[in-house]
Image (cartoon, rainbow, N blue to C red; front, top):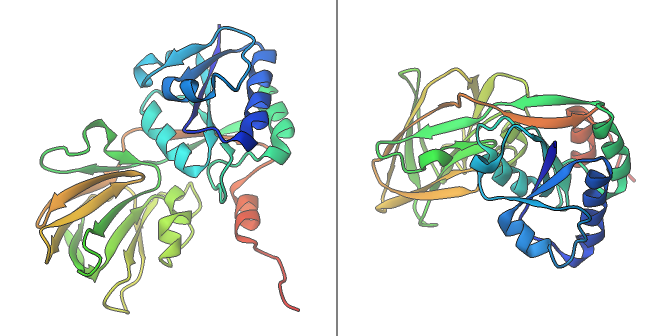
Length: 293
């Protein structure tokens, strides 16, 4: 029997009816529901399941019978979903209970229309590239990849970082700044955008390097091919700094070195036919709205 896996982080009272509608629709379409274990504990007393529920704890439990995964929450939940499924190759549909929602695009007011499209096969699978980080001791273990970005960040709010970057063994720059973001096209609408980075179409084969509060005002974002190998060495006046891969953070000692490149598998995003990247941009960023009096 085919399954649809469901992942989320929390359930607020105002979202119970929304989640119940999703669960009912999955069951009515004849799929078995498989729920992430921690999420199941949070929703079980609030959601009525008509059929037996399977439980999964990690990507090891996701087998070939899982057709889709539904990510319930927001873009942060979607980033967690990417870490959870890893290379299991399962397409993911995001339901937006948050605010911005560039990845979790299904809102409460269009859920019926979108689910009709999904269950009638009116969708595409949008493959998104991932970014991967390596260091000498494999500090991130199997979670060393991200959908949005890798960030090098100061730990002490009063001390800058010195970040030296090489691209394919060619020296690019030494950034004196609060940090550096290396973003995928998907991540170009996230943290990088708030640091004046350009918006990339999700299918452009590139990375964006965006400094955070650069001490040199002439230094700005740069776009490079995503088949590049990027070497980063970070020094700081304090002894430690942070590296974030999406929502995962680790602390490193000054002088640590990293290799960043494109990951060897991709993240599959379900794209309903009625929704595309450009209308998402217009809606989320209010493009084309005349606010003049």
